[in-house]
Image (cartoon, rainbow, N blue to C red; front, side):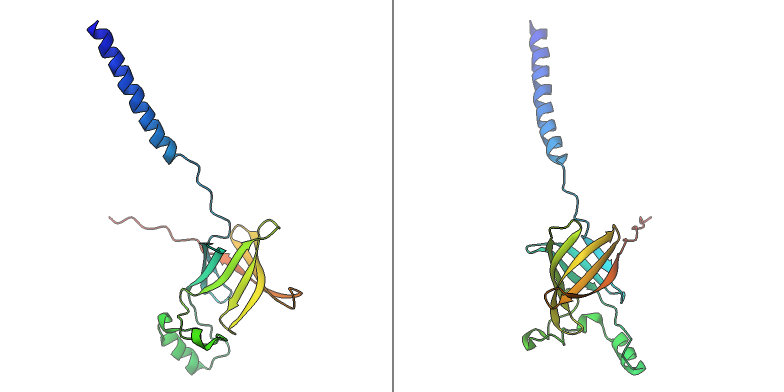
Amino acid sequence: MRMWWDNQRTALVLLMAGSFVGTSIGQDALPVAPPEPIEGIWRTVLNSEVTIAPCEEGFCGTLSKIVVPTEGLTPEEAAAAQAMPVESFTDQRNKDPNLRARPMLGLQILTLRHSDKPYVYDGDIYNPQDGNTYSGYLEMLEPDLVRLNGCVLFNVVCRGEDWVRVIPEPEMAEE
């Protein structure tokens, strides 16, 4: 009789352990929503980088790397700009004087949301080069290529540029 009880107790313990393990495995194995195709780091035409991530408004793009364009600058101006730390760049051309002291690095320049077209995200684009905000949209052309279009005149006149996804370098294991 004792052998039967030991076998039943062992079976009960295994059954309970299995249900707990199954619960924790089941929780870990819940499907995770894949990231939206626009999420990630994107290199602009001028080689700066914008990081797009989910935010309260939908998707927000922030300046995550700044490369100072040299076009339109004298060699002295370009050298001076290159010597400045990127943390010192501020939003000097903003139309609102109260916002001109905010840092450019980390500045939100995109606010996007799903449109009624697949792989197109509508929203607002802040252009720190002229201090204006435009309506526009971002369109996925390929998995690693998007076109950002800023528009005026009720989206009749649009101008765009292509951005390429930045593929992170694999981290080297320390030996």
